[in-house]
Length: 371
Image (cartoon, rainbow, N blue to C red; front, side, top):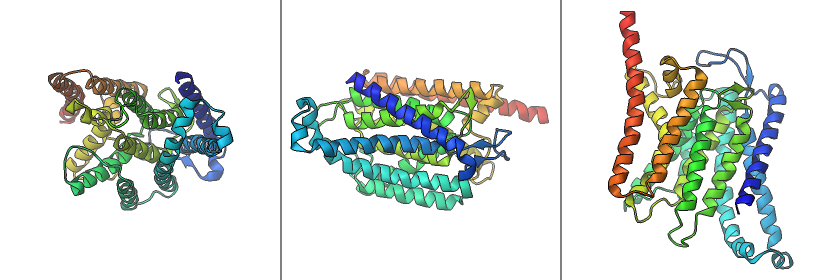
């Protein structure tokens, strides 16, 4: 089983890497060039569209899997494979419609992002399309299960969760390797949770969601070979960040986190705390400064760390480390008592608060210097 996951990871990773190579070579022809500007940190035009490579790697892998499943439905072939695999074929075929619905909705957002990269769409258009896609996802039954018997409320919160995370990874995409790296870290830990948190009905690990997340992480890692904290030869673009954010959000809704320990329902919130912290803090800063929350600026988590004196690479690595700290805390929720969980919540809140205090201290000192 482990070997199979390793081979899958390598296949998807290199598929993403080579598609990204093709995107980079043809970026000028495709019009996928990110030029320097007011909010940009790069000084030279750089090819973008790396998200297409992530998207293509995921689609190619699952298309191959779908073809194999169709072939294995042939009785003569079905008898030739191990029983441990054959007994899962029917279940996988049933989940394939769900899979392609999810990928289809993700494709819409990926295309929205690519168009946005080209045409710089109005924020109302972007939010409207994202909301419609989120509503379609919720109608598939992918919604929050927070023990509230109010379907209208849970559906509304699920739409907010999907749209929020979709935009959080997009907003986090402001330095080399940042959004992709954070997404890869979160995806790895979410996949691990799927293995240690069995499905309440089958009492087996949640292989479907875990496998899906591993494929997504592998595609992201392939892209990170072109764009990481140490160098950038290709940008992800809005298409990639929308696609990643949406899939991460819906994966947490498809999965089951609850068990006999009530605190485990907060696992996805804690694992994804960093992108959510960045989004919420930026929106608060913009509103406080009487600016539109949808107008981009340089008030993001990473920018504020640079203002503290860190280099861009150090800022990204610091955010990676913060993400890992939060993710480890989330995993520990399965191992501790309710009171232990409270301590973990306090630890994570204090970690983010410490960073916020340091950021405010720098801003306060800058204001005093100006006086």
